Length: 448
Image 1 (cartoon, rainbow, N blue to C red):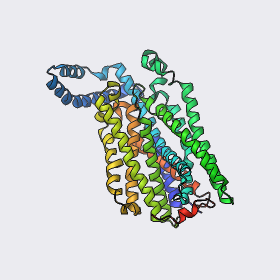
Image 2 (cartoon, rainbow, N blue to C red):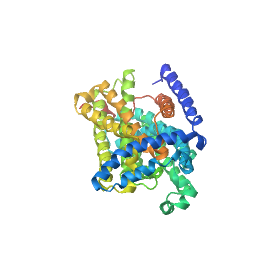
Image 3 (cartoon, rainbow, N blue to C red):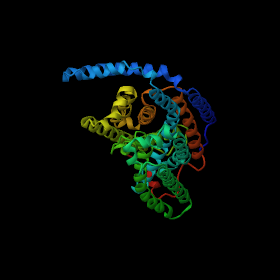
Image 4 (cartoon, rainbow, N blue to C red):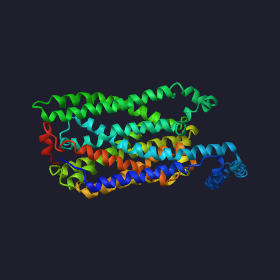
C-alpha cells in the first residue's frame, strides 16, 4: 500500500499556506477606485503608442494615406488617465486579475485530472491490455475531478462579470450581438449546463472506479464489461460536454469572438497534460519502489502518447491561428492581436515548450524509455500548457493590464499543494496493483 511520504505531505501543506497568502495578497492589493489606476492607465497608453507607432508607419508607407499617423496622433494627444470611462474599465479589469490567476491555477490541475479520466475511459473502450497495471494510478489522479470541478465552478460563479461581459445586463442592453447570443448565454442556461457537465464527469468517475475495484474480488469479468459499456457512453457525452464547457467557460469571456477549433484546442491541452502527469507519477512511484512490475515498455507507450498529442496540439494551434490570420476578419483577429501585442512571450513560448522540445527529445525511441528524459520533457510540457491556458484566460479578462506575478504564482502553488494531497491520499486507499482484470496478464508481460 502506498503511503504519502511525510516530507511530501509537509511540502504540500507549505505550498497551500504560501499559495493562500499570495492569493490573499492579490485580492488585497487590487485597485478599489479610479484614482488608484491613473498612473497604470497612463503607462499602458504610452506602451500601446510605442507598439503601434512602427506598424502605423508601415501602413502609411504602403497606402500613402497618412491616415494611420493621424489616428495615432489623436490617440497620443488624448489623455486617457483623465477619461472616466477608460479608468472605470481599467479598475474592472485590474480587479479581475486575482480571480483570473486563481481560476487559471484551479482549472489547470482540474484539467489534468479530467484528461486522465478521459484517457482511462479510452483504454476501456479500446480494450487495451498494456496499461492495466497502471489503472490504480489513473484512479488516484482523477480522484481530483470531484473537488477540482466543484472549486472551478464556484470560482466561475463568484467571478461573474469579471470574467463574462454577457452577465452584465446593462452592457447586454447596449449590445445587439450580445442580445442575440443571450438565447444561449444567460444565467439559468449557464448554471444548468454547468451542473450537467459536473454530473457527467463525476457520475462516470464514481461508477467506473467502483466497478474497477469490485473486479478485484470477482471470478468473472462482469465489472470490466460494465466499465466498457459505461465508458462508451461517457466518451460520447464527454465530447459534447467538453465542447460546450469550452464555449461557456472560455470562449464567452470574449463573447464577440468565436472559433470552431477552440474546444479541440483545449481538449488537446488537457489530454496531453493528463498523460504527462501519469508518466511523472508512475516514475515517482517506481522510484519509491511501489511499481516494480512496471517496465520500460509501459513508459515507452506513455511517452509515445505524449509525443503524438504534442504534435496534435501544435496542429490545432497553427490551424486556428493561420486561418484567422489569413482571413483577417476583425471580429476574429482581435483575439490574436491582443495576445501578440501585449502577451507575446507567453503567447509564443508554448510553441517551443509544447512542441519543439518534446518533438526533438521524444523522437528518439531510446529516449522514450529513459525516466529522466520523460521527466525533463514532462515538466517542460506542464509549464507550457499552463502558459497556453494562461493565454486563454488572462487576456480575455484582464485585457492589456495582465502580468505574471505573485497572484499567478500563488494560484499555482495553492492548487499544486491541494492536488498532491488529494491524489496522494487517493493512491493510498487501495493496493496499487490491480487484480482480477481480464487483461492483467497482457500488461504484466508487455514488451515493446
